[in-house]
Length: 72
Image 1 (cartoon, helix red, strand yellow):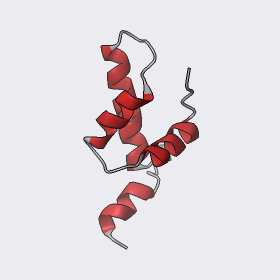
Image 2 (image 1 turned 180 degrees about the vertical axis):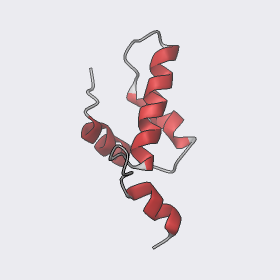
Image 3 (image 1 turned 90 degrees about the horizontal axis):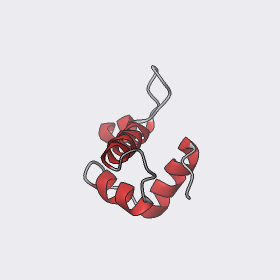
Image 4 (image 1 turned 90 degrees about the vertical axis):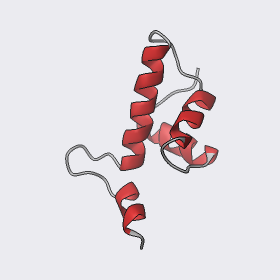
């Protein structure tokens, strides 16, 4: 297995988050700050997450569900 893929999928011992989950939460946080604390559209999150990692829409939805992010 590619070491880069392993790093993206193995949870960190500090908080149990994978690199992918950490990136998604970072992007959500930054976008929410820009929008003044309002909800962030999934399309915006997807586009910004794509700048960091190659992830499909379905996979992002899976991560958002796992992290407890709710659609409104």
